[in-house]
Amino acid sequence: MWLITVLISVAIAKQTLAPYLKNLKRPLNIAHRGASGYIPEHTLQAYDVAAYMSADYIEPDLNPTKDFHLVINHDNLLNETSNVELLPQFAYLHTTKVVQTYSGNVTETGWFVEDFTLEQIKQLKAKQRLSFRPATFNYLLDKITIDEALQWAVNQNEERKKNKKPLVGAYIELKNPAYYNSKGFPVQQMLLDTLKKFGVDDLKGASERCPIILQCFELETLQFFSNVTDLPLVYLIDSGAGLPYNMTEYASIVHGVGPNLGFLFNGKFDSTGFVALAHQNDLFVHPWTIRDDVLPKGFTVKEYYLKLLYENVDGIFTEFPDSATAYFNL
Ligand SMILES: *[C@@H]1O[C@H](CO)[C@@H](O)[C@H](O)[C@H]1NC(C)=O
Ligand SMILES: *[C@@H]1O[C@H](CO)[C@@H](O)[C@H](O)[C@H]1NC(C)=O
Ligand SMILES: *[C@@H]1O[C@H](CO)[C@@H](O)[C@H](O)[C@H]1NC(C)=O
Ligand SMILES: *[C@@H]1O[C@H](CO)[C@@H](O)[C@H](O)[C@H]1NC(C)=O
View 1: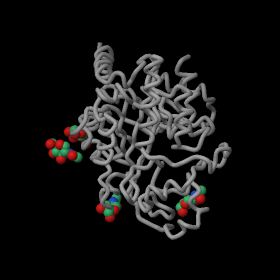
View 2: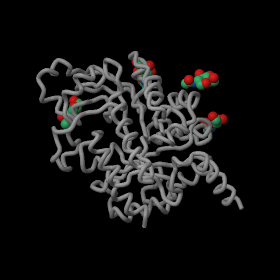
View 3: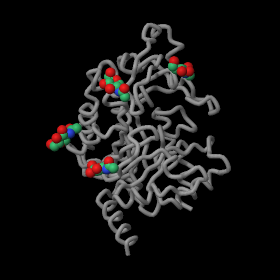
View 4: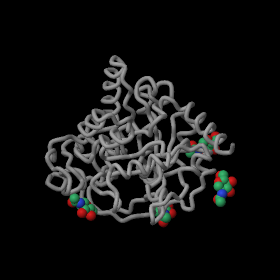
């Protein structure tokens, strides 16, 4: 009886968020930084390939430029994913800073998004972050803004609607908003203005044009969005930040949690009950990240997906969305 009540309440919470959780018979396929296992992350081409592989969402990470544009890059360091260090015109922007992150204040050296104008960012070309992945597309593709990504998604969805295909969404993360606020960048308002510009700042507009989910490691920023929009919100949690977790508190602000996969299993890979506990609190669960080329010891890709299906996750962040498409539709 207890189980049935829990299942029904989770089902109702999910119904209200349709079409975001779309096909409730299987978890969401969320393409982490696009199809980043194949194509340099956070390029339109990485998003295109992800959409082609039937990902439900692409997953942009946002950082502001000096002239207040939201550029898509995993964090504020540009050298991991671009050719910045090869371009002498930007040598003067190489510097060291203390960056306030969810896991504490970190000293970083490199080239920072917030020191570049958009025009300068557009002089860079993307590269594959991980040395063991294909370098075929290095130094060919552009860095992009959230405006370009949303325009891509809205255009893509116009076509999909004509062909009665499911829409592709954007699962957007604001990186280190407290840090950027302290440096004078109102990134929450900047994102809200951008969503408004595309008519996707509420559930109704977003479900017609481009489903949006907002995710963040900082609850304060999610509280800001819960005050101004009915879009689904996801609190990201990593070991080291905000522990022990408090599902009751999260459920009062957000609709779902995005835990590091380590929260779901103990050392012997038995369930910790994390997903079930989140579900009891009406929170959906989208853990991160499956990398087919960096699997836990002893697992094949298929076995790992089956393990997650058995845990009853509601979605998964993956860098190889073709595998999620294959294994979630078994
Ligand atoms: C990080 O630095 C900020 C700004 O200097 C400060 O307000 C904050 O307390 C620091 N956080 C930690 C965890 O030390
Ligand atoms: C980028 O810069 C960081 C910080 O200086 C450094 O740790 C890292 O090795 C650099 N990465 C690449 C690919 O150059
Ligand atoms: C959200 O709204 C509440 C109630 O009006 C207000 O107290 C709070 O400061 C707001 N939070 C943010 C982060 O905007
Ligand atoms: C968890 O959060 C709730 C709601 O914010 C609060 O009432 C409760 O005291 C918190 N529990 C713990 C153990 O911190």
